[in-house]
Amino acid sequence: TGVHTPPTDFLALQLDTLFADVTIHAVKLGMLGTAGVVRTVADRLAAASPPNVVLDPVMVAKSGDHLLARDAVSMLKEALLPQVFMLTPNLPEAGVLLDARAPESVKEMYRSAERLRGLLPLSSERWVLLKGGHLPGGELMDLLFNGDRMIELPARRLETRNTHGTGCTLSSAVAALLPQRAAQMHPVEAAVRDARHYLLGAIAAAGRLSVGKGHGPVHHFHALWR
Image 1: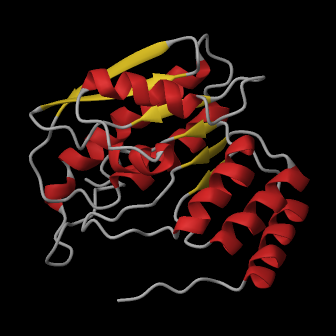
Image 2: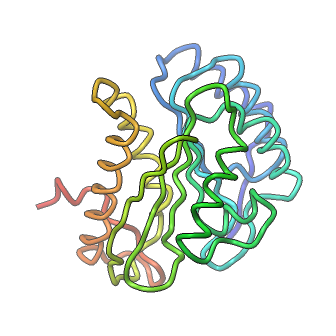
């Protein structure tokens, strides 16, 4: 296996083409890999100012391997986080962002969510969705925090090996739903709740798939596949 990082000049051309041609209602960012890619993406976002930028800071693989270089973490905090509307780390990623031990309880998650919110601009509405899937036990807790409201989002753990892509799926669903829920009373909370409902359904139905020999993917089309 390996990772191919696109040349930053080519990546910049791709992003410039997209922003020039398509009306952007939301942006989801995932694995960025290097400081150069982070810088390029940050510069293009600053120039285009799209709404609803959701960052899933892919930093640590299921194996424990780090997927984002140390200098890229610093660049992400310096150049990219100021442009992010919602940050969606899991517990190990929260530890990397805060240069601290990963939270090990809901109480510690509260403190981490507050500190993570401090990494985002304080002058406008920004959100942290801290995912608690790494906590032990059968009861899970995610926290959604905007600096004023701490919203607990509990769920029961689903016993399955097919959990590949859960974080990417959730952040993508949130980004897709944010513009669709904009007219609701609490649009961000509604988008996150609906995205979690979709993800839990995708995990529950993942056993209907048979893909590979390791951790299989969630079933993204569970509501359509009969």
